[in-house]
Amino acid sequence: MEKLIDKYGRQITYLRLAVTDRCNLRCQYCMPAEGIKIVPRNELLSYKEIYRITRALTELGVDKIRLTGGEPFVRKDFMQLLEMLSYNDLLNKINITTNGALVKRHISELEKMKINTINLSIDSLKPERFFEITRRNNFNDVWEALELLEKSSINLKLNIVVQPGVNTDEIVDFVALSKDRNLSVRFIEEMPFNGTGKRSMEEIWDYRRILKEIRKGFPEFETLTNEKSSTSKNFKLYDSVGNFGIIPAYTRTICHDCNRVRITATGMIKNCLFDDGVFNLKEALKKDISNEELKALFLKIIPQKPKNGFVAEENRKRNPNVSESMSTIGG
Ligand code: SAM
Ligand code: SF4
Figure 1: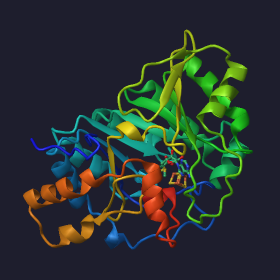
Figure 2 (figure 1 turned 30 degrees about the vertical axis):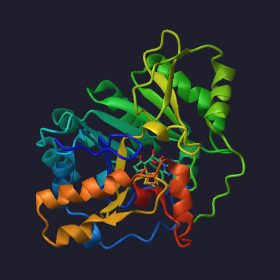
Figure 3 (figure 1 turned 60 degrees about the horizontal axis):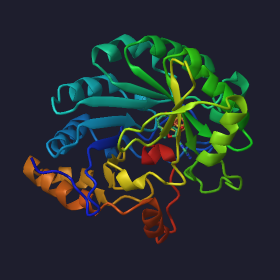
């Protein structure tokens, strides 16, 4: 089997695909209050196109997919897409990142489809603060989803974007959740992708500062050995059921063994979170290309992955009009 190996020797085995740019929440760090300019529905990849793309990539060694957005569960018939993907025998893991607001009624079906991991975004344990951050009143729905998922057969990770001056006082409380609950708490450094380019990021809470904060509540904990290509540095409280970790998304200390390729909801390939898109697949698929031609395209484009996120960002700055939301990028 031909594989996707870039010029730095990294093999790409993990696809992150945004199924929509639409969302039912309006998180401050992701988009402005009025939302972002969404693309017309017919410009989104269709489910058939998503299946074709995924199949071709899995024939080139990709064995894991994460479906994200926007909010994946707001796209009509998202469960049908999951079912289609679950027929791909070359996919070992299907994961989802969701805000959880619409998840609770789907959990038993998700279990049946053998969804491996759900990353549930929850940035505060306080309903009023949750409202301030997301500009929507869905705390109870998300909390209910959290409790149900924790008891399900699906692995549960919580995504917490660490926002200076907003939720840093809850870092210790989030770690405490991992004591008795079967879940992984993941703190994410905030990145400047909120759709306006305007959010100030003067105070930096990088992974060192987050760790320091955790030590205020829990002076001692163990360091877990990282899986290769893991995005997070992982830890565990002594005798805890769950664990916790930090994703140095902004300081980018994880690029050396990145195994990811991203595809946006409109079919743009991104070789790095920080690039502005390198190829439009939707256009190529309109030309009726064969599976072999599609694979040849991937073999040409994906190995051009930039060395790291700083190189990608430098290239991106040459395009001054880029002001993306994480909802379009597919975080
Ligand atoms: N709507 C889903 C959700 O919120 O989980 C999936 C899409 S969202 C863009 C994916 C992840 O990116 C979420 O965990 C979200 O918190 C994170 N994210 C969004 N904007 C971010 C930013 N500016 N910096 C860091 N993480 C961000
Ligand atoms: Fe929506 Fe997720 Fe962005 Fe929040 S982070 S606005 S839930 S896409």
